[in-house]
Length: 160
Image 1 (spheres, rainbow, N blue to C red):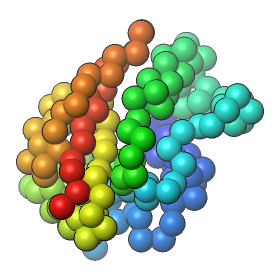
Image 2 (cartoon, one colour):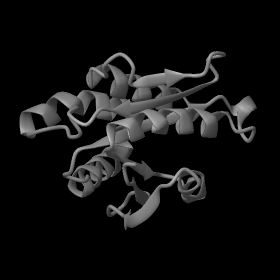
Image 3 (tube, helix red, strand yellow):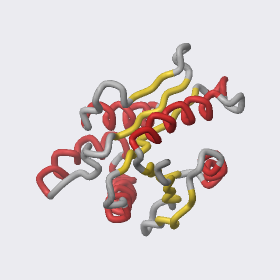
Image 4 (tube, rainbow, N blue to C red):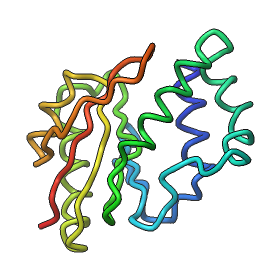
């Protein structure tokens, strides 16, 4: 759990997510974080990747470094090129799972995205979550399966 918390903190702080792109429920038990259409979606070139290396080792550990790098490379390679919002993370406190808090927060943020008329993209690391995203209009595009790493389901939602 500590590694996951560290990963989310690193993702949010390193990407300079602008105010208004991280949404939280009033009780603080759920949040959704979107990267805006013009935000960086990749780690960049070799120099930038080397700067990320200590962070990746901290999160993944040396034994899983290759796996972490494979996942990041596959995500970058398969990321859509058209302007869109990218769902970086959605999280709900475990004691609030299953009561619709995440769904309500996701739908509220998607209304804002619809006003912009742009699509939305997410990679789901858990196949069980595909149905959750499908209920909000996402469609599975493909399975991203990096060698030696868990697969991800790339999902897209057209703008309204």
